[in-house]
Image (cartoon, rainbow, N blue to C red; front, side, top):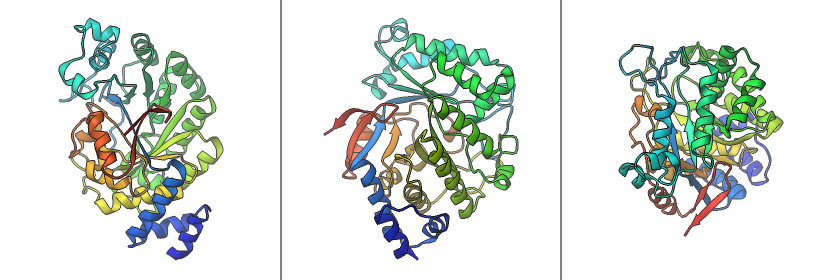
Length: 377
């Protein structure tokens, strides 16, 4: 069946769910990679993107205890933490030498931060646990404070799961919740919390988490008021290949409606310190998942190979299998490392450029909306 699918892809036609399943099942990895690379080239040429960003996790205290999650803690449990807004501002300021917070910290970036971000970060990525005691106003104040101290910094924050929780604790509708956050300075949203949409699999992984349909509903509401988001899929645990295809199909259908997703990010499952345990994904599965995603999600502009989860070498290969983005400098990633990530917690911009260029791609530093900041020669 692969020649028939190949003919569709080269003609620019949409493939079916049955086609996607066959692509997942094929042993012809090189043809699969070539088709995905063809699609990526049509959309983005030889460009491969990265961004200067920083991750902030305000807390790991969470009312949910998902079985696949090694990051969350209960109040009082060893390892539980919660950052104050001032501590968050300080963390961001360490990487922003010219900012008011950076000047208050001593007039220059912290030594480690200056090595990581010689030119200030342009985006902060904020996700965390569902804290049982923090009111919605705390999150509004957090976003407002960041925007006050760093007015040029793009704030990408809060998964659909967090937005749903904010709605519940505040008594506001999803639309009103999102509108309030946007007015406070929220610029876009990450794509976490999607996991796998299948109800059966979700009940095994995270029975306390919102259903897949609710995740999609929150994202649609965000898109309707002009908040762009990413989308993810956590793979390599207890799901089947059919579950993956179903997940991708629901995302494609939503994108047909709203065109609000910026990028799709396949997230490789990490097993350590989780209740469901299991094993790490293979490099072959990682490359197949990136490639099939690129071919199937014809209405997504970008596919990200998240180097934190895939590792640097597989992320490089993924740029030849349909991916066009490897994320960014990241700085202090905690969630995946709690589950046994084998990568470091940061890379410099120079290291990212080197990774990209060694694949033959053109390294492009981007902003949060994929506008070019600079092309690296």
